[in-house]
Image 1: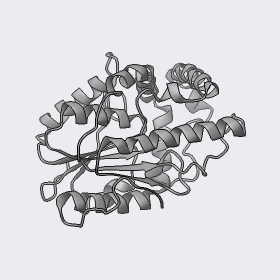
Image 2: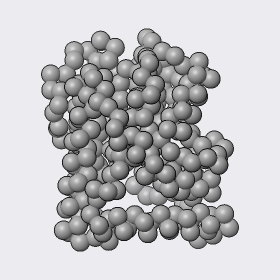
Image 3: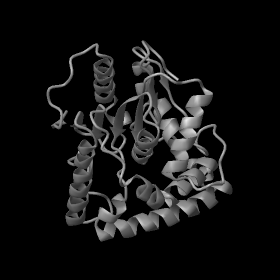
Length: 282
């Protein structure tokens, strides 16, 4: 794990360009949850409680016991909430990168809920196709355009490796259980919390949905991102202008700059913000 001046930051997620930059001021560590990257799959349900238990065990095994900041993207937003609730020792900050919120599906428009169920079914079908090598055979695992060469390869492999698809299916299948486990987490007092959110203008019209449904979905997501500020009296939210869900790729410049400042503030090396509770577009 990273450790610089006793203030490590623990980072998980697809962030090939933020880790090198952040490692200039602190020690940064990423890990692959079971089934992702080089980690073996696990047969147990992949819910928030089990995943945070495994993270806690991993940190113990690695000898990481200093002040820690957890940073989680997407579904990991629920996992770091569970961890903060049950393992608050040495935790000095949370960073949400367009993080999911507990039981969010129940708040989405009906059309979106139906689409997510269909997507989950398609993911299972993709898993079967991947096992047979069909996805790669038809070029579905080719690097995506619009990213750096290394990031594009990581995104493509993340979508097409057999174990990754299986692991993603497991975690999505347990998303309801994870939501029930984390719905009552927080607030966390004055724990520093930094929230990055996608730009609703970036996806004003969501493919496959009408303008009306897209608008409702964006409004719901915005409300849930705003709710994250209630987790602490020392929270701030930043809407990443021009970015979609992958803020750590599409606006890595913003993330690197703001998280660097956040770390320095946690350490006491920079003045505390004067705008706690605010939401800004940057």
